[in-house]
Amino acid sequence: MHNSFATSLSIRVAEGHVRLYTDVPAARDHFSSVFSLCRCVGRPKGPLLSEYGIFFQGRNEVVAWCSYPDSNGSDRETLYAGSSTSAVWVVDHEMIKRTVLRDSDCAALHAAWVSTGNAILILAGDGGSGKSSLCLELLLLGCGYGAEDVTFFQGPNPLALPRAVLLKPGSALRSRSGLIRLPSVLEDFDGRAYCLPQPPPKVARYDQQQFVFMFLEAAGSGTLSRLGPTETVRRFVEACQTPNKISPLLFERVVKTAREGRSYVVRGRLVPAVHQAIKDVAA
Image (tube, rainbow, N blue to C red):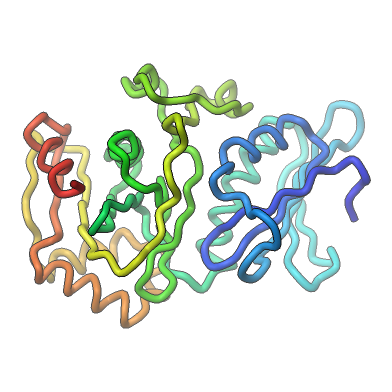
């Protein structure tokens, strides 16, 4: 099924792992660096959710495919055939998308999360709301790294998916000291940069810490307001990509967090006062 020159990588995602095979150097370098904190060391834990391949087919063409366990490749689906850069982008995107929508039993929230000594800070919001930038700034303050864009919940507990933080062109953080930009062919593809603090952050582990919700909105003048249980549940379900997978225990924890006054909406740019308030919550 795989040629003898292929590299094999196992990456922790949701409650299990996915496996990638490739003989394309650009693909090997991207997934090895961008998912360096997610790679399985030793025997992978949890179920194998899916397998992906990125292989040369002829001199200039690369083919990308996906298959599922126990099929012996009989259900292999071609995802893309063309340039190596586009093949890497397709597999990177499809690996998370298919885990969210098909392969995992976990609820998936469009959110980043970090851990502090006594709290799990969950940053939910649409694209462009500032999740990645705020997540990276909190990592630079020493928070543990949970996830940057998708938070999986196994029952009521968040699972770590600490891939490199993706910054858009023009982000002021790209030149911030204390960061390292990781090699990726996709930086030439769409101009976004993959970054991690240096030294790398500790991978977060949920250990019965209390939740704090921050729902981020791009529009507004820079305010931080507390939310009640009803509005918190509405926003949580709205941000959840698989609301049918929200467990009763997770629902109860969301309500409990709001009732205890630990749910907020952040509107607009993070003016210094709001930024400091978030740091204080994370402290």
